[in-house]
Image 1 (tube, rainbow, N blue to C red):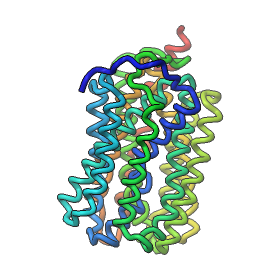
Image 2: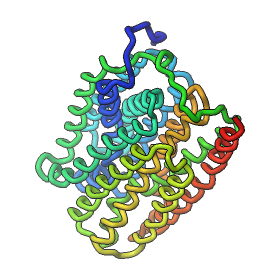
Image 3: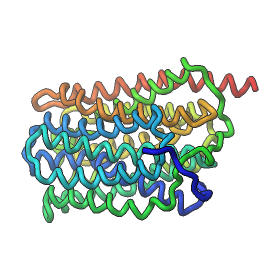
Image 4: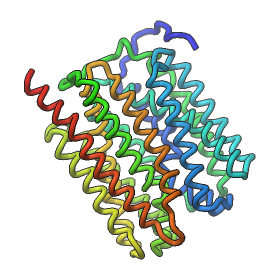
Length: 389
C-alpha cells in the first residue's frame, strides 16, 4: 500500500461528504448495531448454542478491533481510498462466504474477516468526522444515522427471518456493503489537509490520555457485555420474540433522540453532566432486567438504556477530540472502543448460568460505573488546563 497521493481539495464539511461518511459508517456498523437480532438468528436458524453465538459475535467485533488498532498504529498514513476499497471488499466477501459454513469455528473465522472490513470503515469514518469543524454535532448525526438503520433493522429482522431466512439476511448485508462503493468519490484520501483543531482542544499529558482511552475501553466493554445478549435477556425474562424485537426497535428511536440531544446541545452544558447522566443512568436502568418482567418493562428499560448510550457516545468522542491538537486521541479511542466491544461478548458468554443472565447484567452495570470514574480524571484535567490558558 502506498502513501496517500495528492488529490484535488475535498471539503469534509460539505453535505455530500458528510452524507457519504455517515452512510459508510452505517455499513461498517451494519451487523453490530442489529447484533441482538443477528445473534438470535444464529441460535434459531443455524442451531448454534447460546454460548457459542457469544464467541461468534465476539469474533466479528475482534475483526473490527484489529483493523482499528492497526490503523491507530500508523495505518492512517496510507491512502484512505485504498483502505476503504479493501474494507468494502472484505465486508462483502466475508458475508457471502459465511453462507457456506455452518460449523462454529469456520463460521466465526469468516465473521472475523467480515469484521476486518467493518473496522476499516468505522475507524476512517469516525476519523473523518473528527476532522470536521463541528465534531460534537456531526458525531451526533453519525450516531443518528446508525440508529435509524438499527431501528428499521431490528424491527424488520423477525419478518426477514421468516421470509428469506438467515441466509437471505446475510446476502442483504453483502448487497448493502456493495452500495458503499458509490460513497468513495466523496471521501478524502488522507486527513493532513483537513485537520481542524477543536476550539477547546489542549494537549493533555500521556497519563491523562491513558485514563481517557481506558475509560473508552471500559465503557464499550460494558456495552459489549450487555448488547450482544439483550435480545436473549428479553426472551429469558418471559417476553415474546416479536415483543422483544419491537422493544429494541423503539429503543433505537430513543437512541436517535439521545444522539440528537448531543448534536443540539454540543458543549453548552459542558461534558461532565451529560456523561454522568448518560453513563450512570444507562447502568442503573439495567437493574429492571433481573428475573421475569413484562414486555412494557423491557421496552422502557431498553429505550432508556439506548437513549443514554447514544447521548453518551458523541460526548465521549468529542471529549477525545479535545484531549490533543492533532486528532490522534480520537483514532486511539475508536480502537479502544472496538477492543472493548470485542472482549465484552466473550466475557459475557462465560458468565451465563443456566436460565439466568444475572451475572451478565451485574458485570455490565459495574463496568459502566467504573468507566465514569475513569473519564472524570482527564475531563477535570482538561477543564483545569483550559481555565489556565
